Length: 197
Image (tube, rainbow, N blue to C red):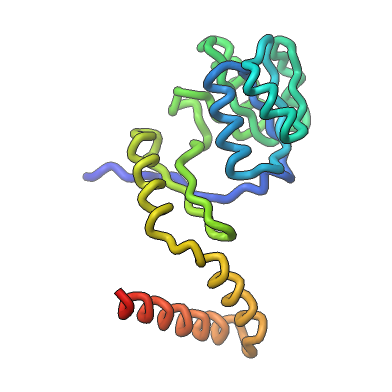
């Protein structure tokens, strides 16, 4: 039987969650950078004994708290998500154990077995956001797919989303009727696009 990707994609409102990143090196910087690239108003604190200058600059630019200290389990208090990105495997595992005792979602860098979620490739064009996962198997494939979608999604997609949202608010009837009407109009947009090619 073919192996499946069992992940369920969700879009988190990270500006309303309390996120802790432990690690101030390259991996911690990468996690912070991609989180803020997708969600510039994310509510994040980064903890590490030392930080890369670019991590400090990124945190300052976004008004984030950085704490120069060793990790302590009390730093998990009132958190929703923790990302462990240190170069100390034992510490990363300890953070995971502490997170699980508190029912927190955890991402332990470069350790798929200790991840409740992955930070996949993201395509972002206005209101349209597509997340790409390879089930932790190939970040390079996710990157190439992201580049592909960035090229093929039209730049005016945001205007189409706005127009459809406006139209949706004018539709009368129950939920099923509204869904049917939205399906009809979006099908015609697809047909127009195909006929123009």
